Length: 111
Image 1 (cartoon, rainbow, N blue to C red):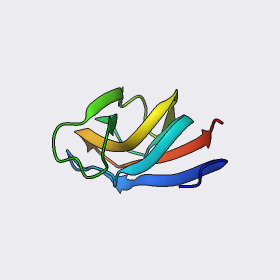
Image 2 (image 1 turned 30 degrees about the horizontal axis):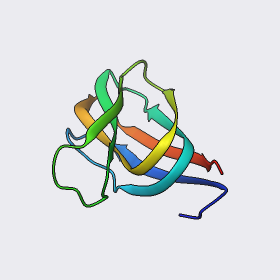
Image 3 (image 1 turned 120 degrees about the horizontal axis):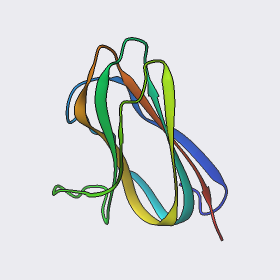
Image 4 (image 1 turned 90 degrees about the horizontal axis):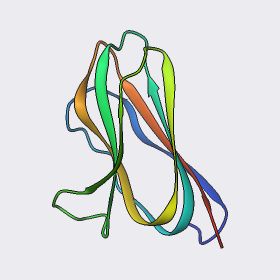
């Protein structure tokens, strides 16, 4: 990632399986991060967590930043976070019922 400016990426794309984990993103900066969680048509349950760790290759249990439970099918939930980040990822904590979820990350580095 660049040292300044904005960035965006897709963390999870149309997934439903319990414990599906996105690749870790190395942020290594003070950043404003926003997570967009899109629930597809037909969804009726599920939970996505936002996690962080010192290293993107850490094999243990990551620290949870926040969790978002299913809210409505064909909708988007948004989580805004400001902080000093190292590595972050998204994980399906509870299987998505009846459809899928897609998770996007957008950020802006602060100087």
